[in-house]
Image (cartoon, rainbow, N blue to C red; front, side, top):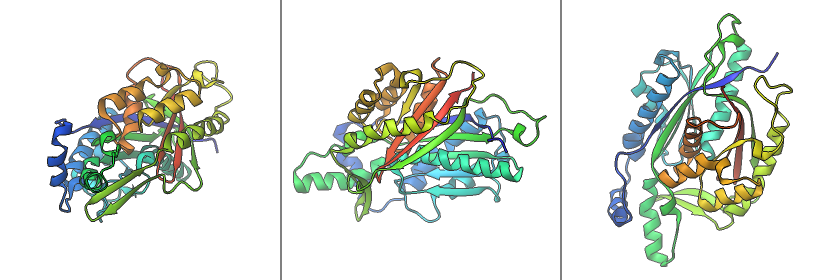
Length: 339
């Protein structure tokens, strides 16, 4: 059977209303000294807000959502925050939910990869699919442990200066025309064409987040930019081979500069390294730099925010997206703007 058409039809982004200056880090850190249900309290509210925006833009009612794929690296409760999110949104009890954990900054694209697989499964069964993807992170919960280590070891640790809190959602829909040719879906925002996953061997100690008695502890080695940059050409080459033979809109791209690039803003050195590795100009990654400069690294949330930012300005038809998480794991997606 032909590959189903998968379309991103809505986005939603939410951030806390206040910005915390460096002078207030100590006060915020002590807020998280005792175990705190920060994500289930503060985070779920952000996830609900972002999800409602995405569902509304997709033109769907909440009872039309068929699946939820959620991701976070800053909560380990059972039930997971996806259950609280579904309850607050009023989703049907029969909605299929999956919660991803342990994928960190790669979570946004890993969740998109899973959402695509769920849509493909629905197409095989001849059923509709509208997957709500939610990424939510309260990375400020890392501050207590980070400051404790800084005080103990008297060493500079940059992790706490990179991260921010936030949530992002999108709706990935199976085009109903794949089930009923008379029922065609609106053009959407992006068409998800394909995806790729790579794990770099022997890198578990380079990028990780552990749970300690005082919260979440991030470990970011100095090797990360050197590990992530070489992954990007591998993702690109694999995805380039999956371009359709014919494009209804324009000549097919054949060079990295023919794409817009939605790269997870893990840090300035990571973005600069990928820009160099792929021989790109800064304008190819404009949305990534913009999100990083305004919101820092919000882990799984960031790359989804980059995609949402990118679609708001005219650009190239084809988009390459990449994100990197613990493992080191690299996720890539090939998308096409709906023109």
